[in-house]
Length: 421
Image 1 (cartoon, rainbow, N blue to C red):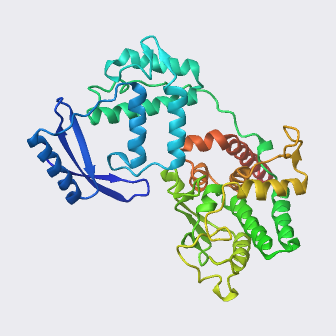
Image 2 (image 1 turned 90 degrees about the vertical axis):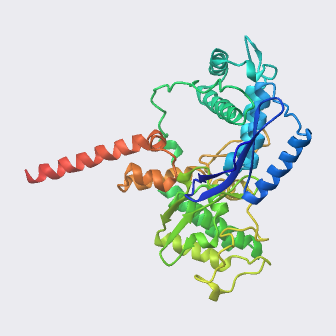
C-alpha cells in the first residue's frame, strides 16, 4: 500500500487548501484513492481498510460501466470537492447535470449509445466519434462545454483507477476563427434613461405610504446606481457585505456572490474578485440607503450608526429579515417596474404577459463599460472592472467601442495639429 501524501491546492482567491490522500489496491487489482482534510482522519480510514484487507473483508469496488456513469460519478465528486478542490456551487452542479442528462446520456455513436457504451471499451477513435457527434448535433459553444465535461470526467476516472486509459486526453474541438458579433448600440441604455431610472426610483420611495415600501425603493435605487456606476452584476450586489464597502476611501470590493438559491458562494472565476472606486454621487446614494436600512429585527438603523458603524458580517443589501434578496428582486420588482413607469417597454410576447423592457438590468453593466471607454479607459482597465475572465471576452463585447474612440482620438489629434501647422 502507498504512503500518505500531503497535497496542496491553490484556490482562485489565492489561498491554499491542504488535504491528505492515500491509495490502496482492491481485490480485483485496481487502485482506489481515499482522501481527508486532516492526516488523523485519513489514518483512521487507512487503519480500518488495512484491517479489512488482513481479514479478507475488503469489498471489491464496482467499476462504473458506461460513459454516462463516469460523468455522473465525476459530478458527485465535484459536488463534494474532488481531489482537494472547493465543492462546486449548486448552480454549477445543476448546469453540469443538465448537460450530462440532455447531451451525454442520449448521445449515440456507431459503437452504441453512451448510456450503454462501456467506458473501458472507449478508445481514441470512439472518443473522436463522440466529439464529431456533438459538433453535428449541438452548437459549437455547447459542444465544447460537453466535451470539457467528458475530458475532465475521464481524466479524473483515470486517476481514480476507474478506467485503464483516458480516451479523451487528446480530443479537442478546434477554435473557429470568426468575428464575434459586437454589442449593438441599442443594447446600451443612454445617459438620459439611466438618469431617469435612478430619479424614478427616488420618486417611488418618496411616494410610498408604508415604511417597508419606502425602504425597499431606497434599496432598489442604490442597487440600480451601483450596477450603472460601478458595473456590478445582480448576483454580486446580492452577495455584498458591509465589510466589502469602504466609505472612507469610496470603494467596494467583490469577494462573493449570491446564487439563484440564495447561497453565498465565491465568484465564478478569479477575475470576479476585484476592488472598484465609487464616485461621489454614488457614495451619496449608498449612504442614503444605509441610513434607511433595517436591522435584522426590521427596525430602521439609527442615524448615528452611519456612515461608519456597520457590522462586517451583515449583508449590504438584505431583505427585510436580514437575509439574501430573492434572485428576482432586482429584475421583476425593481427594473421591470421602473421600465414600465418610464414607458421603455414593448408589448407582451404573449397575451396576458408583462410588457418587455427595452433594456435588461444586466445592460447597466454595458452602460458602465461604454461610459468608461468613452472617458478613455483602456481594455485592461475594462477587463478588470467588469470582471471578465479573458481580454478576448472584453474585445468580443466592447472591441468596436474601443475602435470608435481610437478613431475619434486620432481625429481630435489631427484637428489640433492642423490648427498649429
